[in-house]
Image 1 (cartoon, rainbow, N blue to C red):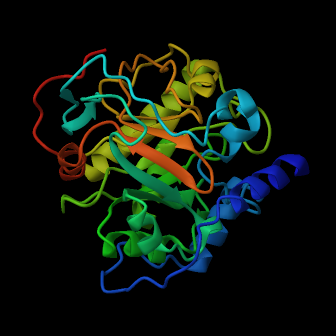
Image 2 (cartoon, one colour):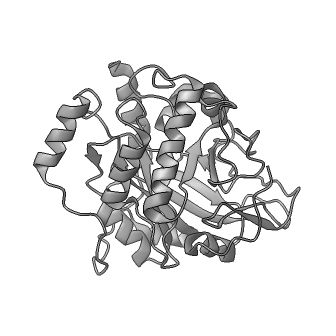
Length: 322
């Protein structure tokens, strides 16, 4: 394992610490079961220890390392939005909306949110609420042996302040099948419930922290892995997962081997003042991670009513346009 990559990801993640801290209330019952240490040990033995020793990577940490300043130019400016299409469309049997922006473009348009992991620790949710953030994604799992120790506190804390929330899984496609990782994610916090405040789970697909960018797979093999994860997640939760990725990683590792634009909403990572080209047949993005300073910041491609529809799993109106 190249130590320089691990060190760099740690520095990047530590740089995203939230300002202040607050201890969120714990009135909501958690969904994550208490898995026995023996089960975790068996998983480590089954899949090897290399990934389990340092499996704590923040969303976007490897994209920032591999894509560098070209992807980070203008990150402090915030998003300028594409308004070439109005309205929204719904796709897949889950009815998950993939919306285009409406109205005049501005840095403040759309619903603003953040994503967090163990590196943020106790998040000052009131601070970020006062900054206008209305949704949050929380890291739940990585591979098949790691569960974030701060998941419960962060997941409940974001909801207690009034945010719509969701969970994400950092994928390690060379560790196990997509289906096994989807099950691990669902079993440890990544489930979806139709309560109107829970977003579909996210599969975080980015550069391998430990070696080959595409985890030693061909494009068809990677597409099969993602399909296995997506179909398993859908079978368990009745929703397809949101796919988080960057244009360059997807073009390199998946390419045109398969299209997920008709089923999964796209969360695109690009730290710039424009979202740029979209990968994989998606014509519109649903979320955009546009900054990692001082914390990962995101915008939803629509208004609050549409974000609530995405959380609720609204009715299918028509297939997404490709």
